[in-house]
Length: 319
Image 1 (tube, rainbow, N blue to C red):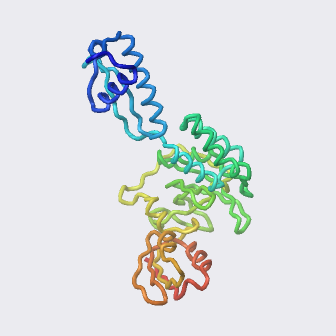
Image 2 (image 1 turned 90 degrees about the vertical axis):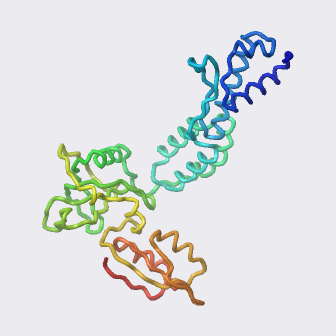
Image 3 (image 1 turned 120 degrees about the vertical axis):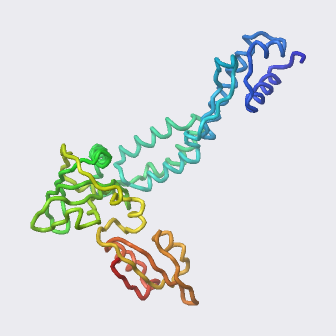
């Protein structure tokens, strides 16, 4: 092949790499009638392009030198980086969560933008977030400590008992509990700990074998938390499945498992099916939809009352 322009070389080399070929620098130099140094510069330009493209697409591809094959090839990576749209979506969700102080949320957003976006896209996302960041309103309570959140997560992972000092607002008391932590969860602005009570006091006796349902603690109400140097074991068949639990609980109110049934006469039944993941439509008529769902606890009662006249004929039965 006759010597071509630099653009032709770049396109040719990139196309060959994209087709999975391994390219030898010396052979390319002979092919184009240029020096190996020129080919090396071409490959470096393509390598820079591929890595910049990864920031936009989220696919981590690299041009590498394969010593075994004595040439360069394009190594396709998995989609591990976040795309521009994914970063924007995550930032919006973080802002809407209101789970952090203004200092915390701004630090998180800055790190997310700095680590995941090229500079030219970063400016655009920053502008899209600017108004929400400026008007971000913290919750009236002090958010959960991120250090406490991490310690609780570690106790869940390693199956360590926890000793809690917990503020209970319904009677303005502080109670002490020794618990088996089962999961850290987030819902409606707050982080929660799902745990099984193991100690016995005058108010409640709830050893795990007798009570298969966890107690729910709002983590920002934990006054103190201590990991005990004591492991617990729960048989695999009895393990806590937080995904299944989340489908059935509303507003993180604990309680027994029950089956509810009601008539929904609103405009869009998808709003019900989205709110209650276990819900199914039993029947439909001109008036509305007959709905059945499995739920934990009493939080569902609060939600059903909020629907007003759109919900009728509510019944429930323990499972």
